[in-house]
Length: 297
Image 1 (cartoon, helix red, strand yellow):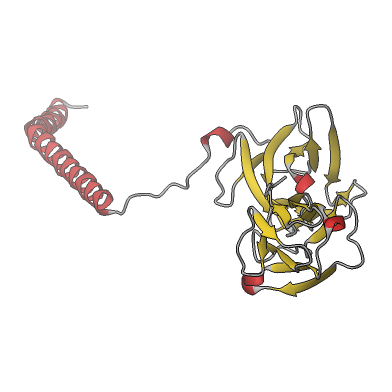
Image 2 (cartoon, rainbow, N blue to C red):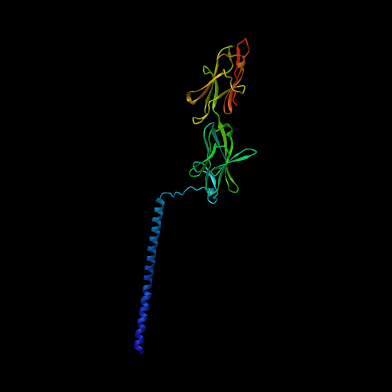
């Protein structure tokens, strides 16, 4: 390569380097401006996003039972879906059909059983949908979706006590129900509808008494009250008849046409296990003295 040609090429390279060095600050400034513009756009987008989020309605998170998040065993709940711990108290009406609730959530194939518990014993009433007691008054009346109700028809006074709904987990989970039985109101009244206290009857006079029973609830199926003398059936000369009173009352009337000494004794009026009694004491040739004592068993 000749000297003039090499010198011209060197001049071209030197000129190019000079141009690049001269333009570097301008390119750097443009790059910085582009970064600032992009940063401003990002900041503006973030601000707009925050404003949109701030204007959104609050997020509603379903209410979870915190104690069931990791525990998936069965548990008892009430009609509102809230967990039950401890026991519950139920009052049943004598003669009515009653239901004891047992709502079990997360049953997962486990079995539900009802037991009746006493201090010294416990008897199995039902297991699943099967009844395990000879008393046909007891049965399971399942109510969708999870209520294993124990049905008791014709509630009796002796049905009071402790009932347990149990799930066969390990250890077993139990819901205790304390049951009381409400007995009907029972009264003995005279022909003037006055409740009896101490009264006087003359020998040979007529005695008319009425035993009035008012069920504890309209749905109760309570039979008519029964009169007895000294714990036995009444003599044939004493008339007894049943009538229906007002307000769904049940009335059994007792009528002695001519009272005499042999009519003295203890007269009881009872429905199931609840009774009232009166004492009629008589003496010959003097007025019959009637002492009326009202008690409830």
